[in-house]
Image (cartoon, rainbow, N blue to C red; front, top):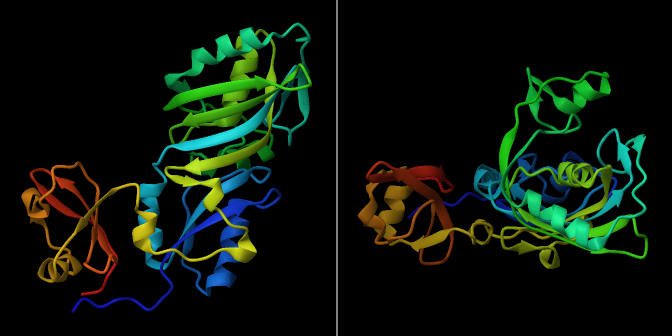
Length: 291
């Protein structure tokens, strides 16, 4: 029989409140679940709210897959004012007269940012340059060159509000997209400037805000549930034993034509490992169970 770990292992879907960093949420979760081995699937700014997926115990090793899932956001774009952080937490650094802004013009401008686009990480991001986080350099008053990155914006919907300079925005995009940069760039494209406020992450992959719980109500889900956005393959007891030892297999051994990675589960629905392609074979990316 394959041995199972008794340490807490699985995923938690948290509705992050404003005012806490993602690291703060992890620190609180460590107290709740009684283990230090907890990580998250993608940083949310302190002022942002919404879906934050935590990996607990051995499931932290699975976060590499969840981090790459597409994400959805809702927020407000404030036109006419640029800030030092590109969001409402920063100081106003430039003011523009955009009183004649029309919804049709705003919607037309959003089309410029659909599909594969290049983004330069803002100085207040957590990207490392020269071994230091950009936000650490920004706190010291420094600005450095940052390599741009390619991201994908699948949809960028805007709706006017009662205030003609504030628009609600709903965005579906790839992992790694900076929403505050989209807001600022949209303002520039319209001949002025803008910043973001009230950002909320509404979805990571198939994990929606309706499933997210406050920290004081959070529950541990199984590792298999956390991998639900990936192809799942049920294996027999003999194969399970080999998987626990990290055995490499011919691809046809899984009897599936789908592309990896594959979440391998036993007949009880418990996640044993995640395998990925390696040439014409498949090998373990993560093994959860002990041999």
